[in-house]
Length: 143
Image 1 (cartoon, rainbow, N blue to C red):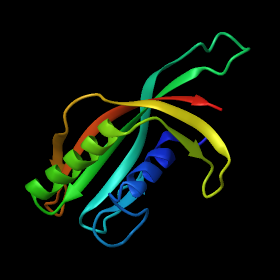
Image 2 (cartoon, rainbow, N blue to C red):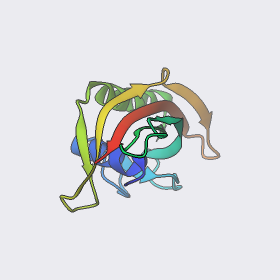
Image 3 (tube, rainbow, N blue to C red):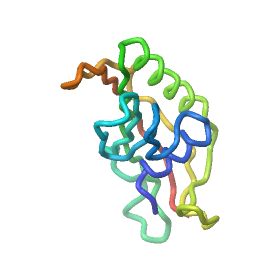
Image 4 (spheres, one colour):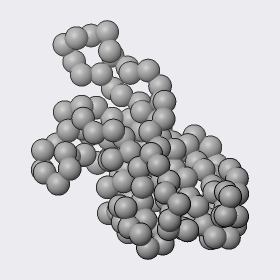
């Protein structure tokens, strides 16, 4: 099964919200936000909640992984608008399946993505770029 960050990356790409490892503005990165481009989105794997049904070895448990989205922009409004757009897109998403890389092998089915709170200003980095953050939880089951 993929890390949740890989599956969410694909969702954001499909929604037109960035391209993985793009060196132009608003590239999408996973678990490490590079110094360039100035405007970028990063998805971090994070703790979620314990699996449901994990004690029953006859069924695959319902998994609840967490993830964090961070958006960095050259000004406050640009960064805030980007993370808000991503939050709105993830809140509207219907159930979807995730596959391995570029293959059609289905690995998991996502039923829901929960936003854990409002997007918030996290900090300014050493180059005075604004970083915003929002936490999420997904509900998925291995297929």
